[in-house]
Image: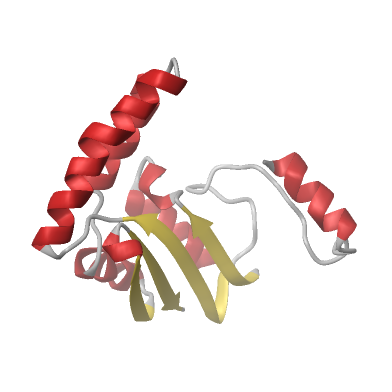
Length: 151
């Protein structure tokens, strides 16, 4: 993925403004108040220590900076949640068996999505770290959610 990103950065002449790095989200090498914007797509659920990772994001974000997180969630509507569960518990494992040799990755995805704190629970965690003005934007019938928070 980083190679694809590098190619796009070069193609769009962004080499002076975008730098790609790998690292530990719970122990960032950047100074305090370094970034204007932090985006995390389907990654927060994988933090070893959720609060530690969010604290690191808060630390490196400039005052009035923005954190945008896209993460899996479980639909709140009971009817939609029923069909979501049916889909995730039958169709996805079937596709995994047909097309992948690593079923544990799919099981991890499903299980971690079910236990991840979403909606108001995740908003409360973001606020406890210090973020404010936390907006919650459910997408795809609530199976994914965008969280926008300010420092």
